[in-house]
Image (cartoon, rainbow, N blue to C red; front, side):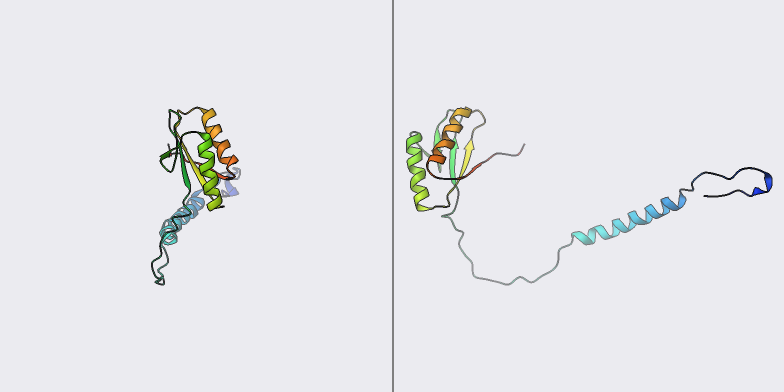
Length: 136
């Protein structure tokens, strides 16, 4: 707080001097602008080299599709009905106990059809189920 001389009979000046505050904030902004690019740079490392390996294609999730007309496909192969779907899924579950199913359902398909397909997946003994969507 700044004071005026008391000799002329006026009271003390009660205004806050914001100049030091602005100076400190400008210094902090400059420090931030200088150090921010340094934080985003990656560390240069020399990675070890190994032999090329093949991707594990057996563990790919099953693609279960339901189009707008209600036609069901398993890995892009049409399925006759829910009983056939359950049998195919049970065979996959027996071969690979950690089977994952991704459901690609058209946005115009009836909810009842999706619920029936989900029930067929559950009856086949598969517990890992995910819905695939697109970002808006």
